[in-house]
Image (cartoon, rainbow, N blue to C red; front, top):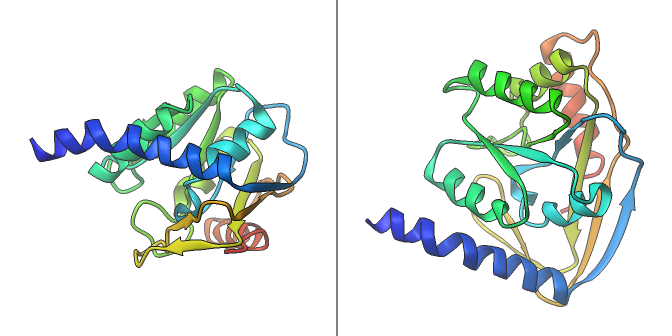
Length: 203
C-alpha cells in the first residue's frame, strides 16, 4: 500500500518540481547537430533530472523511449518522465537483458530514439554496462552524449551522486558530437563510450 501511494503521489510532484526549477533558472545550450536517423542518447544516471529539456530542445516531439530498470525507483522515474511525453522500456542487462535489447531495437526500427544511462541502475558511478554497446552495434545507430551542469546544486549521497539544481541557478546543457562503435571489441567500446561522455561531464 505504501509503495502504491508513493507511485501515485511522487511522480506528479517530481515532474512539477522539475518544471519549476527549470523555469526559474537561466539556461545555456552548447550542442552539436543530432543525427537525422534514430540515435542513442546517453547520459549519466546522476544527471537524469533535467535531461527531458535538453532532448526536447534538440528533437522537439520526436518519439523516444528510455531504458529504465524494473526496480521501484525505476517505476517512479518511468511515471515521472511520462509526463514529459517519454515512453519507457523496463528491464536491465542483468534481468531479461536480451528481451530489453530486442524491445529497444524494435522501437528504433519504428523511428524512436533510445535514451540510456550506461551506469544505471546501480552503478558504479560513471561505469559503462554492455547494454549501450550491444544496442549501438546491433542497430548501427550513433550515440549522442548528453550532460548538464548547474551553477548551484544539491548533490545526494547516493551511488550516482544525483544532482538537483537549486532554483534560480544557471543551467548549462551539453550535447556532444554523435559517435559510433563499429568494429570495436566490448571493452574497447565501453572505454570509448566513457571517454566520450566524460569530456562533456561538468558536474
